[in-house]
Image (cartoon, rainbow, N blue to C red; front, side, top):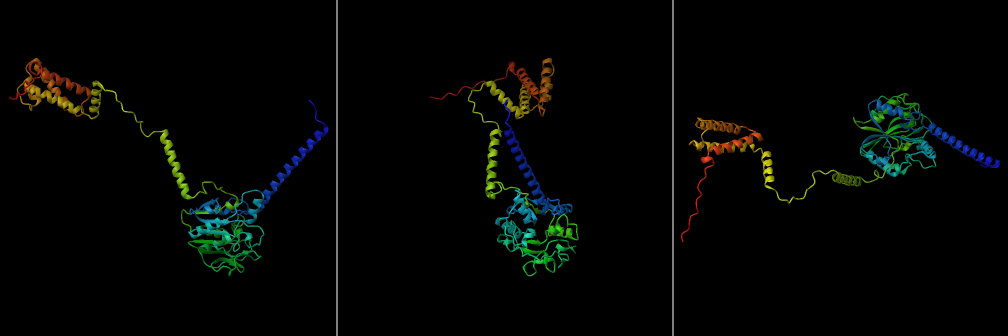
Length: 432
C-alpha cells in the first residue's frame, strides 16, 4: 500500500482544522444566541425566569381558576376562551426571528377576529410592550396603539413614554378590578394620557397618566395595562401586584369559564393544517362522506345478516314433508292438542263399544270394561290415556305413548277388530 505524500497529509490536516474551527464557531454563536434570548423578558406563561409569567399562571391554577394556554393564532379564537391575556414583546420577537425560532406576527385577520370576539362578549387583557411608544423603523408584529391600522378596530388608546417609572400609582375609583389593591410595583415609564382617549376609564394612575385602564367594546371588555413588568415572576410578589393580577384575570369570570394566556406570538405555536383552514361547512361534508365510506367498508367486511341463498327447486320426499311438519308442530307446541285429540277419539270408540254416549267420563267407561283380563287391560290403558291428555306440556315420548294407546284401544274396541265402516251409498240414478 502506497503512503501519502507529506504535502498531502499537511493539506488534509489543515482542512480538518478549518472544519473544526467552523464547528466551534457555530456552536459558540448558538450558545450566544440562546443566552441573548434568555436575557430578554419573554412574558410567557412557560417562562420560569424573571421576565416570565409562569408565577401568574400557577397563581390562577392554585386558586381554582380554569387556566390554559392558547397556542393557535388569534384568527381561530373561539368562545371556549372567556378571558384572553396578551403580553407580547417586540424585542423578544425580533430576536427569535433572527435566531431562526418561531415567532408569531399578527395579521389583519387576527386583529379582526380579536375585535369580533371581544364584541361578542370576550374579555381581553392587553399588556402593552415597550415598542408601543417607540418610533421604531422596523415592522412590529404587535399593534402599536394608535399607530397600527390593523388594530384600529380594537380601539386601543394612545400610549406615551413619560421617561419615569411609576412609584406612587394609586387606584382612582372603586372597581372590582382594583379591589384590595392599594400600591403596585413596576418599572415601566409608559402611560395612557388622561385626555388622549375619552372612551377609556382610568383605574390605576399617577400624575403622568393611567397605568391600568378599561373600556367596553360591544358586549365585551378590553383592559389595557401599560406595564408588563407588574406581573412577571420577579415582581408578582411585590406590593399588591398579585392581587391586581388575580382581579384582572378573573374579572366577570363564572365557574367553568376559561382564562387563557396567548402563547402563539411567543413561539409556542400549533401549526395550521389543511383541516383547520377549511370552511366549517366543508369540514362537515367531508366528515359525513368519510363516515359513509367507513360504514360501506364495514358492511362489505362484516355482513349484517346471513347471505341470501338461491331458491331450492329440488323435489321434496314424503319423509322430508313429514319431518318438516313435525318440526313445525313441535315449535308450535302442538303436542298437548294432539294428545287430547287422540284421547278423545279413543274415548268415543270405547264409549260406543259398551253402549254409552260419547260424553261419558272415562272412569264410567273403565268400570263397564272391567270384569275380564282383556277388559282390565283396556280399562287401564283408557285411564292412562286420560292421564296423558291432562298434561300441560307432554313430552315427545308421552305423545308417542298416547298415539300407541289410542291406536290399540280403537283397534280392540272396534267391531271384528277393525274400525266400523259405514256402507257406501251408491249414486242415485237419474230417470230417462
